[in-house]
Amino acid sequence: MSKVAWIGLGHMGVPMSKNMVEAGHTVFGIDIAEPAREAARKNGVTVVSTVAEAVRDVDAVFTMLQNGSIVTDVVTGPDGAFAHMPAGAVVIDCSTIGIETARTLAAQAKERGLGFVDAPVSGGVEGAADGSLTLMLGGDIEHVAIAEPLLKSVGEYIVHVGPSGDGQAMKVVNNAMMAVGMAAACEVSVLARRLKLDPQVYFDIVTRSSGDSWVFRNWFPLPGVVETSPSSHGYEPGFMIDLIHKDLRLANATAAEFGVQLQTAAAAQQLFAAASAQGLGEKDCTGLVLGLDETVPSA
Picture 1 (tube, rainbow, N blue to C red):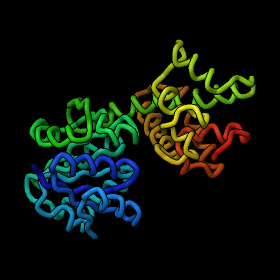
Picture 2: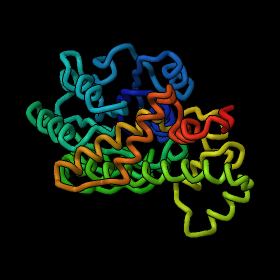
Picture 3: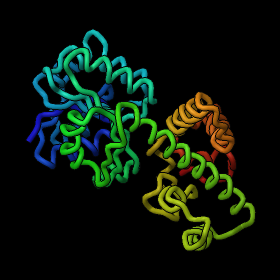
Picture 4: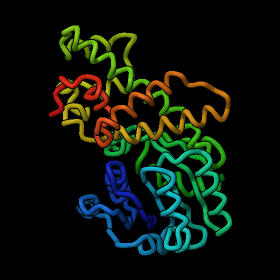
């Protein structure tokens, strides 16, 4: 079994690191929030105070953080992971950070005799909890060979997409489609309420019809129908509105670089931006429906 560091013990990091512990790995964790640290401790993670403590003498360093800027600071700063990892160890970043950030970090890792694999995930908190995530890997084959056996503790479908940045490229296109689907599900659910359709009947028919989708089925935005959806738990995240908005910004910026117009993704970005401006940014992405219809119960 391996020794690993886990940096970022949030909604995804806590269950993913728990699965690592249960697979028999020794996990050293760090997070800035005490509730996250305490949750990880209860799961058997050895919680430490500094990145240097976490990464010393480990085989791999996992990061699951909110954006590329934070990942860059944590990995490349003077007291960051690169400065204290043993030679030959690999950073496995499960965050959504963008293609160029991943490629830059991989190049910097190589200069230090380290590895870097971009390994963004899909499947949400539910997939993190039951170890069924999809992981899309970008990196050199020798570093992916180190990452993949470890990732089997947290995911069911693990694919080496290509060189550094390609995991992020795959995540950009996947999350653009997911976010558009979430925006559509929220907008149309508002219409269903206005039409006075019974929410359970609405859900049952759509999930047996051509309007069905993964986000509709798993993250149904109206409360009290899908027990595991954040909408049935006061719209607690989950996948925050601010994060889905960040992913849409990445997708639209990437598309613009390649001369592609993602008009539906651009519209979805505007919807999530408006919800964030309404103070809903830390709600789950299903909470977009609250910004579209203030009569939807939020608790």
